[in-house]
Every structure is written in structure tokens, then in C-alpha cells.
Image (cartoon, rainbow, N blue to C red):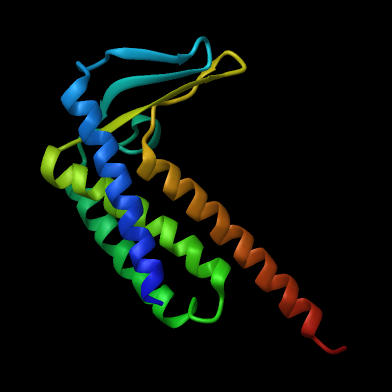
Length: 157
């Protein structure tokens, strides 16, 4: 089980190193073109959650993130020991939650920098931790769906 915590730690390190590079090497709102009209590194800060909602509600985020981290660790220990998909799903959620939590604690805001324009839509700027959360939640939903299918398949009529 410990390997999943190591993976979560690696995700946190990647997240924090990439954010540090952005903070140290880019001015706020500076943008570097990676792929014209599609992908940019844009130095941005967010004092809220996804899409900038709940701006400045740091106490709320401290409480919610603490609950999420404790809940994820509990679920990993109780339910994910024999389910690799659930374990890796929760690993990504844990890494993402901790990555953004570190920003909120030490910076008072989250550093975002991955900036995509998809079919003309300028998607909200995000970071590695956000990506980990999205991947993790998507995989949790998939694991739940698969588990439910198995349960229905094992029912005898």
C-alpha cells in the first residue's frame, strides 16, 4: 500500500517544482507560447477553487482539504487494498489535494500556469495538482462504475 503514498508524494513534488519554476522565472500574467492558439504557460494565481469560485475563502479550503485528505487516506486503507484502480484513483486525488493545499498554506493562493485554448474556448488556467485531481476523480468514478457492474453480475436471481 505504501507505494501509492510514494506516487502521491511524487505528484506533489512534480506539482510544487513546476509551480516554483513558474514563480521564479515568470512575471505574474506573463505568457509563453508553447503551441500557438492552443497551449501556453501563463503565470496566474487563484485565491479560490476551479474557475475562480469561492475567491478568498481560505479557511473553507483548509477545512475541506483536511477532511478530503483524511477521507482519502481512510478509503485507501479500508477499501483500496485489494482494488488497484481505486488505489491509484485515490492516489491521484491525494497528490492533487496536497499539492494545492501546500500553495494555500504557504502562498495564500494557488499557482496556475497550464493554459489551453480548445476549439476557441480559453479554458481556465490550471496546474499539475488540478490535473491530478481531475484524473483521480475520473478514475474513482470509473472504479465505482466497474464495481457496481461486478456486483450486479454476481447477483443471483
